[in-house]
Length: 302
Image (cartoon, rainbow, N blue to C red; front, side, top):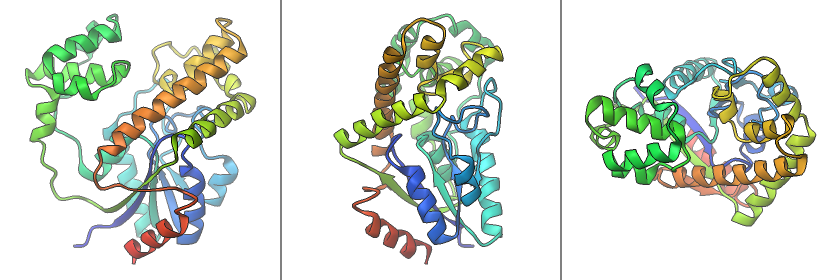
């Protein structure tokens, strides 16, 4: 049986994925399946660049607003939700556009998950007070390959790699190397959106200003008012901790804006690094290559 076809639009934040997806959806009769690890959280709208109510009325979106800000949501849960959405989309004769910048989630959807050991709450509680830099140094001793791949500040991935090594006695990199993808559930066209560095940085700066002007501080105040714990998943969304510093009086608005821009640029760099390791991606500029990528998508779907 021929696997269903899906089109994936990936790439760094502010590269233009949402705008292109909305345009393509109108042309193709498609619906969007979000692959953004922060847009699953209710109440995180402005700071995650979540599609607006008008955009969602124009094009149906899936995998948005699935959980509250305090609830963990991982790649396995995303895979289940996205697979259900794609099945529903295809059942109705529509095209599924998987759109987002969370590379692990897209990989999990298309290729499955590495069968490494499950999370261990007791171990994570022991690691919680330890500084991220210290954990990364410890990871380097246990799994040098994983330590080279994971940014020293990416606490979530550092903890996960440490957890696997400590629980199983086998490095995460070894689990991943031994993992062989089985039958793939989808035939996928992977298009990565790319822009020159200066162009992307300018878009990031403009977006940061627009977010602060558009109510990001109000979203942060709402999280604080509901008593969202400092280590809740919501605060790991880029911009929220930086604006929390301003809201709580630790810095002024100008400093918060600068911090949001810097954090977003760093995040975009990590995303580029991740996606550059995905050999199936074809890279296109969303505007200057628009006719080319539209033709490629049409040929793939045909």
